[in-house]
Amino acid sequence: MKGKLVIFSAPSGAGKTTIVKHLLQKGFNLEFSISATSREARHTETQGKDYYFLSGEAFMAKVENDEFLEWEEVYKGTSYGTLKSEVERIRNKGNNVIFDVDVVGGLNIKKYYGDEALAVFVQPPSVEELRRRLQGRETETEEKIQMRIAKAEHELSFAPEFDVVITNDNLEVAFAEAEKIIADFLDQTNIQ
Picture 1 (spheres, rainbow, N blue to C red):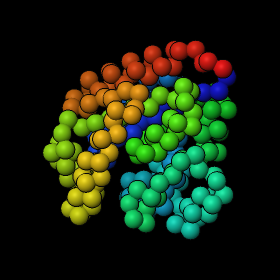
Picture 2 (cartoon, rainbow, N blue to C red):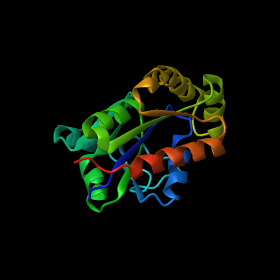
Picture 3 (tube, helix red, strand yellow):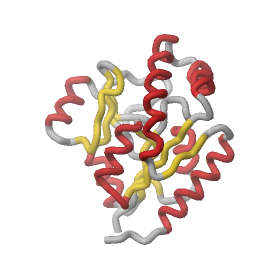
Picture 4 (cartoon, rainbow, N blue to C red):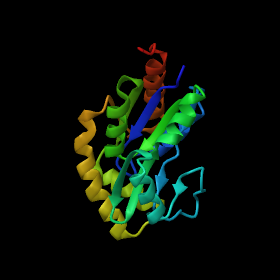
């Protein structure tokens, strides 16, 4: 039986990556779907582990060849996407696929897979807290943080379109809530 899909989306800094990494340790037969991006790798990131880092030209060639399940130019000159081959590679092994994707991408994957996918939106307790978290990372300029905050304010309006929303104001509580939601979803029998 093919695996199911669990999609985590959130504004940057809301904690989705931390929650996804936690869930990968919890024995839900989850395998991380590695996204492709046209941005440069951060000093802490590894090719093929954190992302598939592609040049802008290589990324657009894959778009033209219809190799993406979803993709978006998230910031000017910086695109992210989910390769169809990555998702099917994981599902064909019988593993469940877990995604850490932007809001529009998450909704596109949900639309494509329907009931085989669960779309989870992680939101921060407030925009002010989000700003504090982004500044605490010390990985980006103030200008980039301002861009992310503006984008986050727009993305928060999409929360009602997701299957479930987790507010991450206490990480341990968010972990427990995510575990329960995923366990319940994976326990449901696939309707084929």
